Length: 441
Image 1 (cartoon, rainbow, N blue to C red):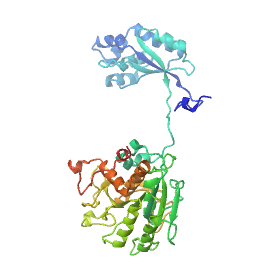
Image 2: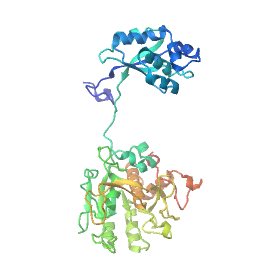
Image 3: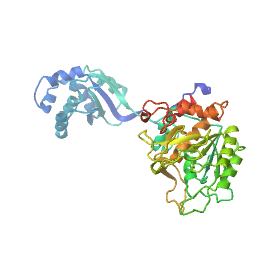
Image 4: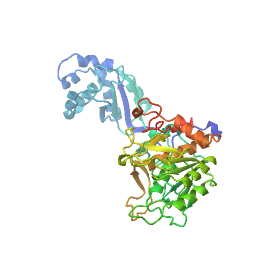
């Protein structure tokens, strides 16, 4: 058996045919056909009948010896020829097909036809006989093609955000790195998250993610790629999830339980994570929160937080995004402009996809949410996990870099956007759009 290095990367699965039974590609010589078509100004049928026997002989051979059923021009044909061929029969139909396949101006692909024969009629001798005609450039069997692929995720093509950040160019592999998330919880039974190495702390609250926000964020970060299920996350990595939201709504809304949040920030310092996603925000600056965040950053955690979604309601400054040392993330829409809701400010670092982001949701409905399994949601909450995942991948690729250096790398490699008008930094876009391929280069 050959050594692994001698094995082909892709090879055909056993048992598949290499050609389509009963079909040949026949490339007629345009020079043998075109003069006879141009010599007359008659209708399509009359011009086709003018084709000499030398052109028709190889096709007659196929009719008599290989059970030729149809001859179809491979590419578009003139409308007059198409109309004439709809009613033609017998020899006229064959002549019209030949005439229709020869473009008066294009030689390279002119004269290409697909001949349908009896299934067992294709042989080397038949091909050789037809190719011997001066009116034929070549004959070949019609090839079968199959995809050489790994398992793909059926919804990946709907994830415009992955293309926007150049995830397909970066092709990140499974990283020996951990991302922390503080949110509404996670549905660890979701088929796109079930295989993720997960530590889940829910502080006495139920393990259920009632709101679904945390499960959505977790999918953006770490949904299993190439598992033939749903979507792909930015990083195939470990997760630590802290549920910091109460199970009981206040006025119909769910809010962070601040003591649980602070406890989580304290515990995070020893959790072995590379980056922390905080898709949360509020207007009040809190010294305790700042203290805990600065402690995390000093211990090597890159903290990423959402700018907030209230631009149309006064564009307030929100925390924790506005704290020093925190990577502050705004949202971008599909048209590569700032999402209308995304807050702006001088503290913004960069933007990431945040409008209509497809990701995972809990598999069971709740009183708060009817959507299950997958949905497209919008918010700076959806933009931030793109960056938190990228920060973790940079940390895995460059373990010598600390949080401030990782943040600088994300900013320095960000792609400039039309709305920045050639500026290096703007309050709307920060340093530009997250570019994962450049950050990992």
